[in-house]
Amino acid sequence: MPVSISKRRPRTSKKTDTEKSEKTLKDSRTCCNNICSIFSRSILYRVPLTIIFLFLIYLWSTSTTAISGHVVHICISSRKLNDRYCLTAGTQPALRVPVNNFTKPFSEDVVRRKEEKNVVVLGKDGDKGFAKNETFVGERDSDKSTVGTSLNVIKNDTSTGETFRERVFVLDQDSKPIHEENLDSVLDQDSKPTNEIDRDVFVDLDPETGEERYRYFKSKDESEETALKAVDKYLQIQRSWLSMGSNRGNPRSCEGKGVYVYDLPSKFNKDLLGECSDMVPWANFCSYFKNDAFGELIENLGIGWFRTHQYALEPIFHSRVLKHPCRVHDETQAKLFYVPFYGGLDVLRWHFKNVSEDVKDVLAIEVVKWLGSKKSWRKNAGKDHVFVLGKISWDFRRNDKFSWGSSLLEMQEMKNPTKLLIERNPWDVNDIAIPHPTYFHPKTDYDIAIWQNKIIGKQRQSLISFAGGARPGKPDSIRSTLIDQCKSSPNQCRFLNCTDGGCDKPESVIELFRDSEFCLQPPGDSPTRKSIFDSLISGCIPVIFDPYSAYYQYTWHLPEDHRSYSVYINKEDVKAKKVNVIEKLMSKTLREREDMRSYIVHELLPGLVYGDSNAKFERFRDAFDITMDSLLRKIAKTV
Image 1 (cartoon, rainbow, N blue to C red):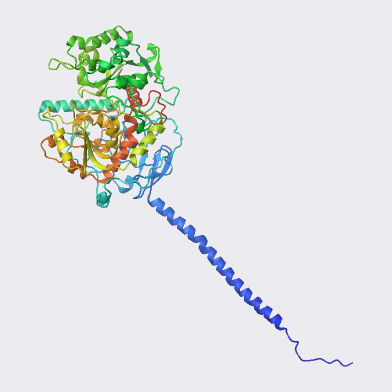
Image 2 (image 1 turned 30 degrees about the horizontal axis):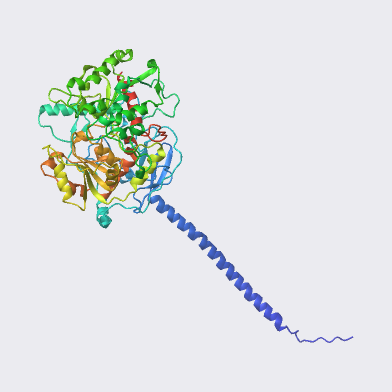
């Protein structure tokens, strides 16, 4: 059967063609989208990674590596930060400390390479709060150490051997120093070396050791040269007694370090406090002896601030010794014997009364006689005994030329004991100067850290300040000259006149110092001044005019290199009007000021204050801790 086959092709529906066209178009779009998506994702993934990578490079290039014990800190620096911020520094966010060398001459560059400027080695737990010599590296109490060995890094830690609770105190990153309008010109100066020669200081070589020593004035004759050499010799001996460790944190650390407190008859201490209303003619001292002799609270300054009198050291120290962790009640277990005789208050009560010299010496003679009856005194002829005397050494060295004070320290029996005073006799190796009591008496590490952060970030409106009064009756005084120079530059210098009661309120003095970069500290009735320590704890750089004001005094609490915390200007140049103090201080660069202030606040401050009588310090050592640790070291080496 025939079949008819049509040659006509079947018609494709328009709908099918359209679907194929749309499908083809869709496939091409899908492919394009896939390609774009892959490309976009690869770019999007790489851009953040690139940004992060570049940020890490920037972070690395602007950061500082600081090694503290076995911990590495990463510290970031920038023009907006006054100090480096250490991401892992715990309580030391502002970790920038000038690298100094306390025994090398100032004419040499201590920092040999630019790279070294960014490496700061922090002291291990237990180190003293300022840069130290290699004398105390390794076995700290070893007799083999040599005083004055050079050291090229600063040990930056005021800690004891215990772990400090992790706290981070972040400074205001936008805080700026004073004179912002001149900031650019000042920053331009910062590129210049800061280790310039100090023309007010000389350097001599020790003929015996070959080491270089600071000399602040040239001797006029052979006898003065001999006297200066004796001063330097005793300073080096005292520095060899400085203890870098701590008695706390180790249950066995008090072994062989017992502290015995004599129970003296009350007439030698407590009864003297009872005479507070008649101590001096113009003031009632009773309010100063409140709160363990800290005085009344100053609430508007914060925690731990009191109206402390400059002569309150004796009862303050006594209260702390009674609670010392190494105190023993058996004389046979003692290494150090503390004699709580308030000799300074005994002298003070007779200063302005018309009494005979015999009356002035009554208690001094009696306390020496009382001690002479003790076997513990006779055993080592008093060499292991310590007196704390809250006035200057000369108040206890009355002689035929002067009727002032007592003759306690002129007695033969008082040659061997250690005497702790607010101002020492530079030619007596057993006279040791310790800080004047300030108004700040913290109770915990937290109190200290809070105050440190408060003053390091403070905007200072004045370049220079001077709180004091003229001494018209003293022809050698430079105070009138300084006052005239200060008043002639009111935009740079502020003067607080203490002769009309301007300094009676501690708040006025502290606020002035907190607001100033430099604080002038000329000698007053004696070379030393309580104001030096008030300025230091306020972050104000002291300007010293006499080496006997600080450099020849506080061997346990201030470093040998005065440049790290002060400016020295020879008083003879000021007297002869060879120097304008205001202009000289204006020449100091911003970086120099910041370095000194950072060192003062982070390194020195904790060791310059006397903590509360119930103080519980874990990280820091205060002035009392440093003194007691060094006393025990001294006794161990000399008795």
